[in-house]
Amino acid sequence: MRIWEADYVAKKLSCLDINFGNLKRNNMNVIIEPNDRFAYVGTKTGDIVEINIDRAIYTKCGPARKLLGQGINCLALLPNGDLLAGSGDGTIAKLGSNLQLKASCTVLGSVTSITLTADGTHFFAGTSQSNIYWVDADQLNPELRNTCHYEKINDIQFPYGYSELFATCSVNDIRIWNSRNR
Image 1 (cartoon, rainbow, N blue to C red):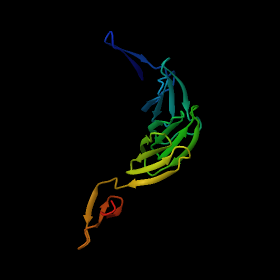
Image 2: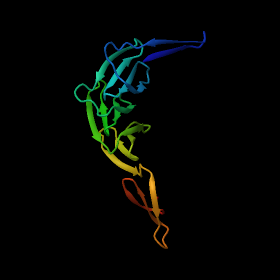
Image 3: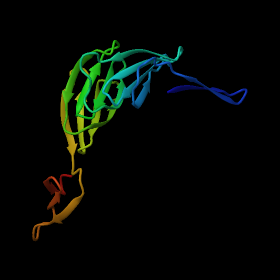
Image 4: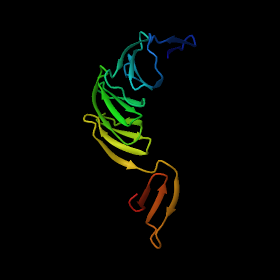
């Protein structure tokens, strides 16, 4: 990993390699604090590495006791400095500034995205199984808000003389839809 610096006056780019010491990780994603002091990197091994941007060195790695399964797919930073991490095994974790686990919950499918509300009190979490959850950022209570097929649709059927209702079948499930409601 490198930190790139742009000198607009001299029209030059310079880079500085980050010193990880003997720590070897496959990096999946990165999020930077609003004050540009620290960057947090989600890894394929399921931990988060904190990097001091000014010194170009990693400072800590966490959570210490329990790694998140199947890697960290997405990160979000709460206004109070806590981190939200979505992992491949469907875990959403809230970590404190010391990268220790504060709370966690599990959803169906691998967590692929986390989007905070403007005030940072709730967030939407999307999964690989096409589920969208509404989650309270304080308690991490997921509520399923929307779902659909996550595989290809093989067939669609309408009942005779009633086009408001129809059924679709996919590889894994059959769903009944009402076109009046959504």
